[in-house]
Image 1 (cartoon, rainbow, N blue to C red):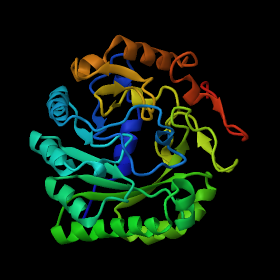
Image 2: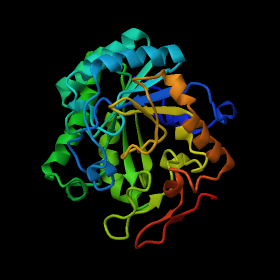
Image 3: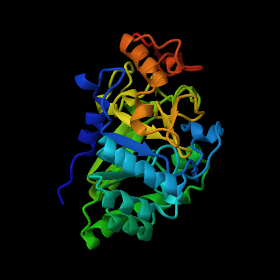
Image 4: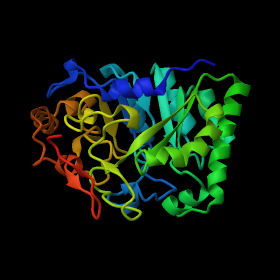
Length: 328
């Protein structure tokens, strides 16, 4: 089954085209919505485990109203996840079906894989899901247990769920793309560590790609001794990293939290990137809000040191040699 390249889609979003280099860019092609801020993992590399904000599940009525607004504004690609694990939401298949019935061309989802059992995956595919990506960020069961503090046996369950998703897709003749990504905790050295598991899952995916280790808005600056290699900002995927400034997340993709806030950041774990309450204003009004325009203007000038983005793109890793400066 021929599938569209997920890396092409990612690169199209992380590249800020000329028409988007503005304080008031056009409606983003892609928006991610946090159906839930809850997660059954507490990974060391994820600031969600720091419990920096109140967490909960999105109001279903608000979600449905928001989708109508987004479609009217011109959004094409809808991610039904943000910082939580969406398979915790019982009505996830209904959310996918609602989005597809409204007319969204592309609905995508990322999961940690622990809850994406064959029955749940099939329900999502049957509802019209276009893309499912497994975040398989661990080289082996021991690494998994070290990062997640979960039993090593859970690792094989995740791999099994991924393989079962491939089987479910084939048996049901669904058109959903199946992908996997992994984090380059130790830079290029991580490729060799991941080689065995990548070779194992490649026959069950349409594409496997690598991501750099983000500082998550500077919330995560050290981990696992000094071996971890961080990158500043959010430069996209590892093999096609973008400059940290201006950050594409402010210009080409929207991010909506479970409580209805439009965020300017991919990693808004504490609410400081709040650009507007979508329960009180339309998406495009928040997208072009004064606060958002001011932050974008700083990025366009490449002067973000005094903004909420300053620490994210300019920091020094504790105990390590990795430095990222906003000028670079």
